Image (tube, rainbow, N blue to C red):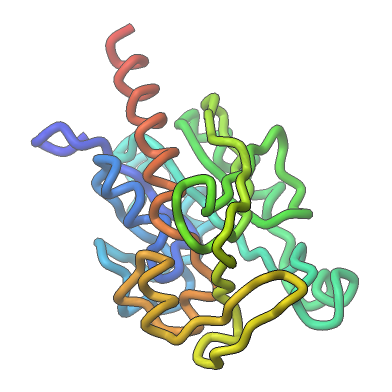
Length: 227
């Protein structure tokens, strides 16, 4: 933990920081890691291979004892039906890293969360729906953890949901899905990520998701420390 008592969270495959902001709002001090530069990431950032970081041992650059919990969002394109021309094609062109990430996370002995899309090989995952959290973006995402997570049931109330995908910037209405493609400013607003670019928004999750999870992780960490 930090000197002021904030638990530290390692955010792997961090992207632009939607998940990180949620954990920050829950009370974590966050450090992000991604193999690509993330100039708009809102917290401390290291450009590294996430799996190599997990393989670090005591005394090395990323000693796991420095952290209290880990979040990982391995690339989702191998599982997403929206990638390329279907799942079979994307499996050939994008890495499937969930199983290896899980093995390395378990070896740390720390509380962990793995986030991904429907179809990813997560174990005992819970689903979070943005509309169930009061957001106008639906964006179903799945979370596996070695800590029990409680999440609200999925809800799809009116008015129409906003879809934050490649259609950002084209004000179109999809009558079949009752969905609206937003402007960039609207997408930033509903995703709670005013710092993010269009491409970053399409890959991110709103901070509200991990704020919900983060409070539960902190309760678990404190209970374990007190035991």
